[in-house]
Image (cartoon, rainbow, N blue to C red; front, side):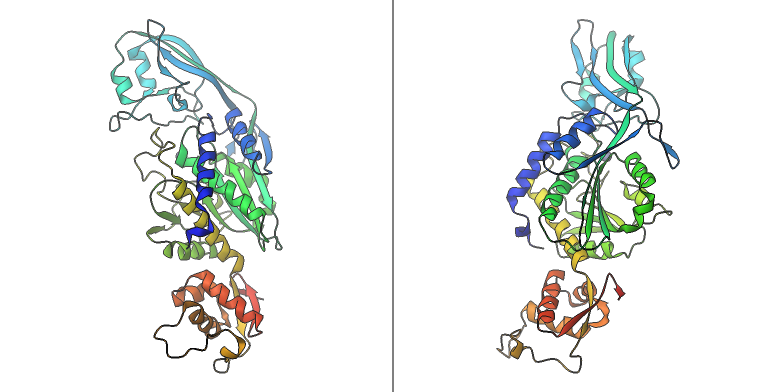
Length: 437
Ligand code: ZN
């Protein structure tokens, strides 16, 4: 996988997008989520969709909409000792409104800190059980003297809407690739914003290319967003043939792909192939935990949707803390992730089965201009080797990805060889996606 496919300047652009969205206090509903989608709409023709609070979506109910203006804990002297304005992680996301004077002892059950990382603010949520709370650094917590505190969370939890953003890029085929990213976390850079930035730039680049497949991008609140989308789009779900959930794509770790529930779908094989050629990487089997692949891979749908990350959720200490900040994600790693996504999509676009039309002994490639004609080399250039592999394996049974795997060559080299052989009339397309036509 060559990084030149995604110029490093795109990494800087993606990092700038992460930086611009970072201050917004997002949640699974509310104005922070809308502001985020409006911002992305400046870059992509995203369609915004809304469903009202109280809507039943399978076994779930769309919750009341949450909005927040301000929150603080102030000491006797009126000084804010914990302030939402300095970091939006200071408030437990979805906190009910509160305005009260209380002792530190009464307040303590509502305070969350991380003793093992005393300078980090944890990220906590309370979506489906009404409560309130504050998150603070352990140092802040330890510095609070006993006494009375004024506590204010100026939030609203009221009937409103759940919002998501959707973009379809149609291709020659109505078969779809689903690219889904959760967009509901407040100031967390890797966990949510990095995936959204990669999805945004991937969509912009795909929009300018000829496409065999169609692509559907979803910017949704985690869990309830994918459940809502699946509930409302149940009839069209059969068009989704492949999909990676995109998340945590900006940290310095190596790439990780978690397979779909099916385990051997084309997306699983394509992602495994690309990662194996990308250097250090991790391949994981499906587990019903993680991001929205949990919903896409629920048994009623069982879609071929895996999850692409760098370091996976929960596997880095900065996960769900204020240390998942703008320094935690780098332009280089965002660019590398974008490049990996494009390489995976290239496999999906070009996977095919071919028939060798000259199967009785090797055709003479030199006279067709496909061989440089210099004999006796110790090692064949990979393109020439790829020509031999494609010719040998193209009996209609073996797809290009399988040939790439068997030969140890990269998919794009195999695909280029197949294209060259087709042009000379030595090869004929006989099927797509592992199925012979
Ligand atoms: Zn998260």
